[in-house]
Length: 188
Image 1: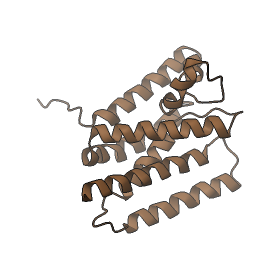
Image 2: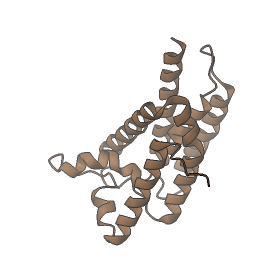
Image 3: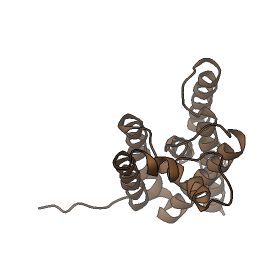
Image 4: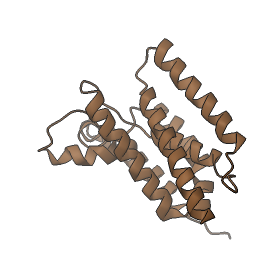
């Protein structure tokens, strides 16, 4: 009988922590979702504010929101973790969470942000750079970037929903920057 392999520790742990966050939110009538897994303007004296700068990427509004993010995370994440290593991928996730958390805190004082979309878009842009060789810009990056950026800008201008399109773009920019940084590091 074959054994299961925890083949992508960062991505799988992110998945299970997000699932736990969703279940805790349900069990606590969304108290944990609001207090730990959403970022919004609050007092800098509140220690939960700093937890939320990172924890918001684990929170999801409902099961549909969770599935939408986790399906992409589980498809795109493991190859990136294999290529770049668990430690570097974890640093990329934490950096993206912090940047999007702080930007949302500063720019959108009257709304809350939660969900892994920024992380997913960071991974998508990182994946589009994975074929970079000799400092040449991959066509996949340009196509993914154009389509992704175009979709987010269109959504920001013409679709009124509760989607934080700017934070998706922030995730994509973090992934692109992270990819170029890692590409230069590998080339050196």
